[in-house]
Image (cartoon, rainbow, N blue to C red):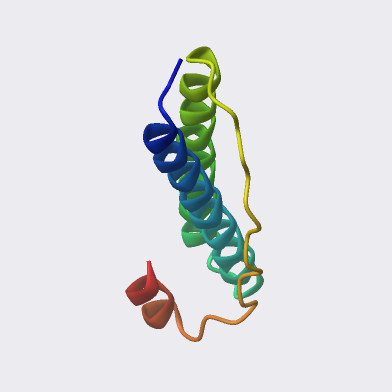
Length: 90
């Protein structure tokens, strides 16, 4: 059985990974709308990678008898400015 401190830390990291995935996906959609399709594709790949990280952590937690506790994910802004401004945020 996993201890509470470790369980809480893993749950927090899962939520951070999911938040990052949402942000990358929002950025991808924004860049696609600006006809920067290559950037959009790269950002989508980053979103998928963050989701994979979260799922590995979920599996790790559950395999050790931990309790999954997902938190709310803040809605990302739909606006990111120029391509340079967006990548400064990345």
